[in-house]
Image (cartoon, rainbow, N blue to C red; front, side, top):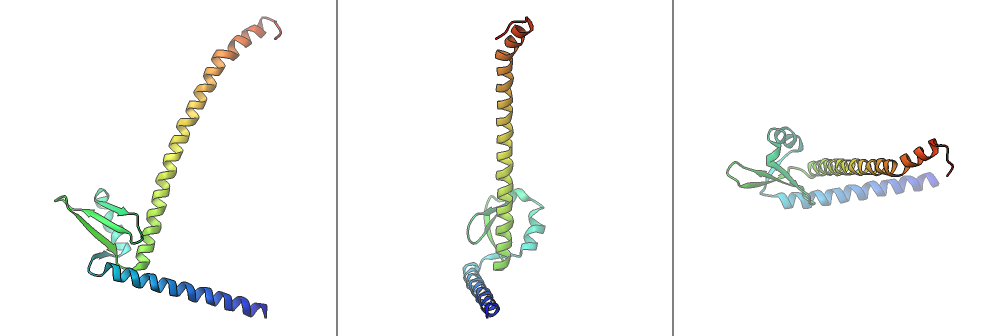
Length: 139
């Protein structure tokens, strides 16, 4: 009895997920109708040629802006909703890596500042105490 309930629950979750994916995919295809599109693999292979010309905008429908030589910008979308999800995941991962490297650089600067404070403290206070103790005097 308990096994059957678990299976029914899993089937309901899977059907719900598929329904949601289908509805989002349908909305995505309606949104990009008549626009320039690329597949995810095409984007990866062509964007590495001139990466400075490509910019991904952070939104539900990952909009890609390509800057042409004339100074214009062409908006390109992913061909399928699944490709859009892959690009969004890749974009978020890249954004997190940049954020984490920025935090690591800030942390390194902070640690260097702390080390400088420790060295200054040592120079200002501990050396005179060491000389005082070397003379045989008690604190």
